Image 1 (cartoon, one colour):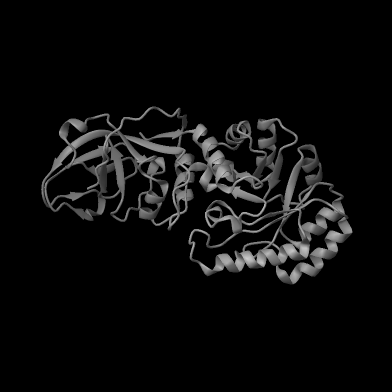
Image 2: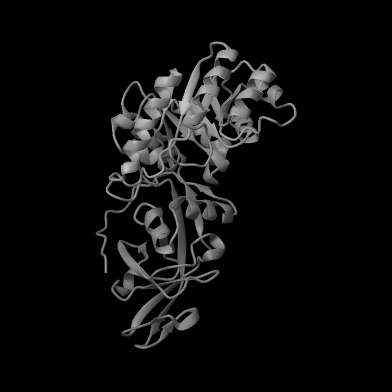
Length: 371
């Protein structure tokens, strides 16, 4: 079956790489929400903390508590994106674990004031994503509530809606609106860019960048360079090699008819292992120095590769096949499945019985052959 390999040292390296990219004076926070995209929030936080990360974002109070427990550092900052501030005893949990809630509405801000919480403030401004956050029309009420709270250290966040496209007009529009929010609220710390936003350049970095996708080697897809390297691999293995005649159909639905005779490698990994079933005919895998096209429909347990171009002595039963990893980016698989890379990764991790920690081996230097 498919093996999932997680390289935590590469996650550390990706965080360091992004720190060098944004330069001194900009904090690089790790967004490890939703159990670090399935990689394990405690283990991921501990590895990043060892390399110097001191600002973490979690989805929930429970996740934030797990981060605090694993890193064992009361001075590290842990920000909870969805703290459910109206929940009973929330103030006690925030104080006990030294957590900072992200405040996304006027009612949340009023709740903080009424509860007497004494933590720093993290406010979220809606500059165009239209999911949650304060709006420009609420600035007057926000300022009044902030005044009633007294002077506290404040971080102002927002999020870009189209950062993966460097030519999107919304990027500059949102940046201008974010600066207008900052002029009104005068925060101590400003944060607009997540992983894709970082690639837009220093004008978008402000004081804090929030890195999620890029930590795991998921890079923006359009015209950006691949700055970080994959930390998650999905490796299958060849269980059969078949010679199939011209005109034969491969897999369910008879959707892929071979134009000529071919050698087909059957790989023991399918959608049961999180590998996307939907495939638009442009997907490749990597084996023994060669790229091979995925043919037919991915089944629950198997994937089929055309290995006709690979020398016979390079394909054998038990041969490992990289379906996702260094040579086959998550973005490639996601695009051929009509989804996004994080969706693919979360599914793979959810299906993994016991992900292995991968120590980076010295890889053989083989030419990659695309067909």
